Length: 254
Length: 365
Image (cartoon, rainbow over all chains, first blue to last red; front, top):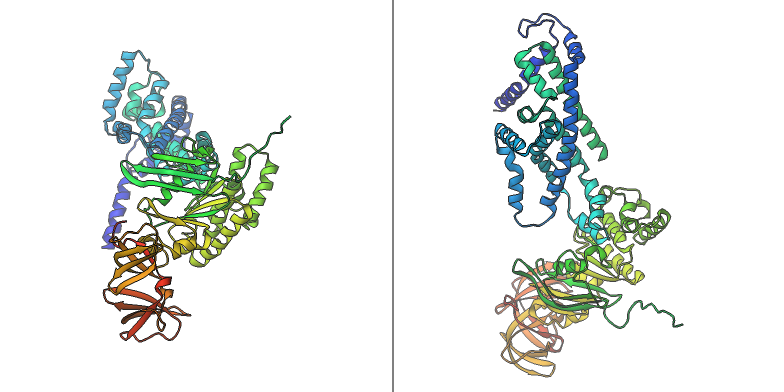
C-alpha cells in the first residue's frame, strides 16, 4: 500500500516537472533542433538569450509592469484583507464574493470585456492599462494570502494597543503593519510572479511595448529556437530566486 | 488671587458607577441591567460562571464593547461615548495580548512612547514598572521567550505604567498552574495596596475572589445575585445560587413558615427550623437552609439529622464525608478517623449559625 502511494506521488511530480526538465535539457543541447537524440553540451543558447536586445527589452518591460502591479495588488489586498478580518460591516459576504468572482471568470472573457470598456472610455492601450488589468486579476490572491496571515493574529493585541492609548492609525502603524509584514512580503512576491507570467489578459490590453511573456509566447510559435529554452530556464531560476530571497527575509524576521 | 486647586483622589464619591447597565448582542441579552459602584483604592471582583456577563461588563468599561443601555460613569463623567484609547483605564487581558514583535521593555513602554515622551524618561519608568513586578532582568527578552507567569507580569507592568484610575483584569490567572496562581494572588493584592490603585478583577474562581477582594459582585445569567464583602457573601448569601456557588453549602430547600425580624422558620424535610435569614423573605416563599460543611458536627448538641455515610474523601488534615439523609446529600468535614462507609451516623448543627437564603437550587432566580 505504502509503495503504491509513493509511486503515485512520484508520478504526480514526474508529470509536473518532466516538461521543465526537457526544456532544461534542450537549453544545454548543442543543436538547432529541439529533438532527440542529444548532440552535446553548450552554453551558447544562454549567451544568445542574454544578448538578444529584443528579449532584454521585454524583460525590462516585464519589470516595469510587475513591480507596480505587485505594489498596487499588495496595498489594495491588505486594505481588503483588513476590512474582511478586522471590521464588522453589512454585506461582508457580498464584498468577499465580488472580490473573488473575477478569479472564476475565464481570462479570455475578462480580456475582451476590458478591451471593450477601454475603447468605450477612450483609454489607450499601454503599460498602465496592463498594470491596471493585472492588478484586478491578481487582487484575489493577495487578499487571500494577507487575510490568512491576519486571521491567525490575535486581535486582542490590537485591543491592547487601543487600551494603551493608540489611535486607529497608531494601531495600524505600530501593531498591525509589523505583524502582517510577512504576509505583505509573501503577497507581493506572489503578485510579482503572477504578473510576470500572465499572458492572456496582457496580450489583449498591452500596446506597442510588450512584456517578456508575450514575446516568448509569440517566439515559441513563430521563431522556435533552443535560445527560448535557455530563456525559460533563466525565468524559472529568477522566480525561484525571488521565492528563496522572500523566504529568507521571512525566516530572519522570526 | 484665588489659587487653583486640583481635586485628586477620593472626593467621597465612588470611582465608577454603573446604573441599569445593559448589553444585547443582536437582541440576546448578555447583561440585563446591573447597578454597582466601585470605591477608590479598592479591590473588586466580578465573580460568576462563564457566560454570566462578567467579562462583557469588563469590556464595556474598557471600551471594547458599546453600552446598549444604562449609564457608566468614571469620576462622575460618562464613559459611554469615550473611545477605548481615551479612557483612563487599562486592561490585563486573559491571553496577556503582549505585542509579539516588541521586547519586554518595548511592550511595557508602549503607552509612553505613544505619548511621545523622550527615551530617557521612558527607560526610567519602564525600569520602575518592571521592578514592581520583579521582571527587571527580562527587559530585553521577547514575549515568546517568557513563561506564562512571566508574560502575566509583563502584561501587568504594561497596564500599570500609565497609572490608570482603574485597572481591569480579565481572568488574569486562569492560564497559570495552581501553585503559580496562589503566588500571583498574593502579589496582585500586594501590588494593589502599594500602588493605591483600584483593581476590578473578573474571575470564575471563588477562592481567588475571596483571597483578593474587598468587595465581591456575584453574577448569574446577566444579573447581579449579590454584592458585598467576602465575609457577607460567605456567611449571609442572599440566594441559594450564591450559597452554592460560594464554598459549596448544604442546601435544604422548603417553604418559609414565618418571618420574625431577622429570623425565619423554614419547613424542611427534617422539620421546621428557625435560623437567621436574608432580608425580604415572605411566608410561603421557597427558600433554602444553608449549612456549611464546617457548621455540621458529628458529635455535638443542637438539631440532629441521622443518615448513612455514602462517601469518604481523604483530604489530608481532614476528610470530607458525604451523608445520605432523606432526599438530601450532606457534606460534612471530619478531623478524626472518619466513620465507615454505610454506617449510620448522627449529624448535629446549631440553627443560630445556619442561614436561610431565598430560592432553591435547580430553580431560576
